[in-house]
Image 1 (tube, helix red, strand yellow):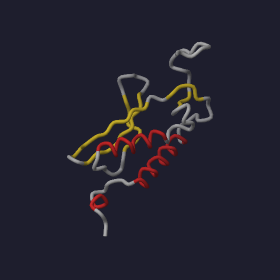
Image 2: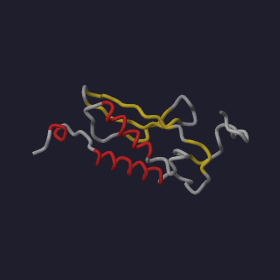
Image 3: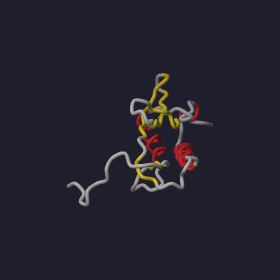
Image 4: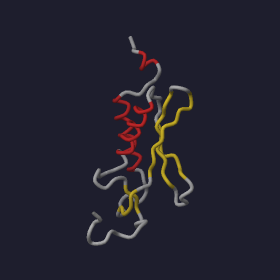
Length: 121
């Protein structure tokens, strides 16, 4: 017998893991992936509630025009708790980073000048 959370379509940890793997596969499909990655992609997470009590995480990425954002992906099933949806979205975002120390990278020139020889305090 399914519990109440399964009946409402709430995503479990296995679904969140599948979401993260799917995000990693999406990154592999980025053209020019052999190009040196030089800047962090500007990806944002937000949680949407299209119907009361049904929360979905959404990943968006800033376009070349800073005022435009495009949707990268979103949760397929809803979460009953806003924080659970947010945490699953963070796990999906982590899937875009090939190296957790560097974050999700994009090909092309750096958007800002390089740090000086010494890092800020």
